[in-house]
Image 1 (cartoon, rainbow, N blue to C red):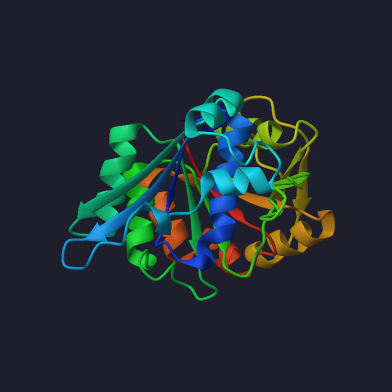
Image 2 (cartoon, rainbow, N blue to C red):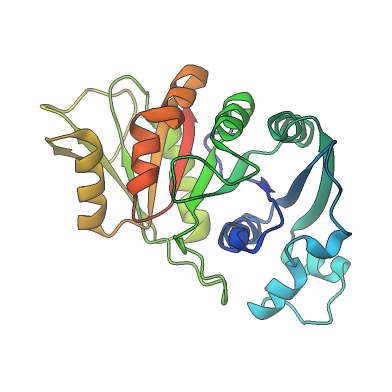
Length: 273
């Protein structure tokens, strides 16, 4: 859903400890937007299912550690106090991409929160081709954290440090809807957050609609984006992508994937009209 903060967040998980920072981000976003959080595990039909729900990330224990709820609060009391719905789902599917895409469509999810490895591909069960296909099939925004990043949500305290968002813009991807979505997301997390725009090229393009100041820099695209992100202390880099083909290509091996691989902060891929 472009132009509004996400209200239905899905966090596909392989139930491993390495995904705890991504889980913390998904949970904190759901609390900030008073939406629904879907913790989704795709069970391979040929593999043994996990032993019960205790292997899922612990929502109430985490919220209690963040001092948002009483440790003894029931699930109903948590939902009533925070205005958030929590769903744990284990879905059998022939492949993770089919399971994730079907679940996202069925439950009208509007943000995926994923953890990536330091290498080019994504998390072990959600490998590179699956992640690309899942994002392409769902066409919803995706927040991507590398496993070596703590991101802008403190896993132990729930404190949000999303102060500066960098969004590169270029002529082939209309930025207005993506900018509105990113601004709404950032301000839901921190009302004082600043979204800064950057264009890498010889001259500024002309865009339709009202946009804030666009910084103009010259140089290699990826290196310039990363250098400017470091210069302004960006807590998040938001990458608008162009529809099915553009999003798939971006994740597969061009600008967004290269930025993701080297970025000092998480990357938010948002489809633009």
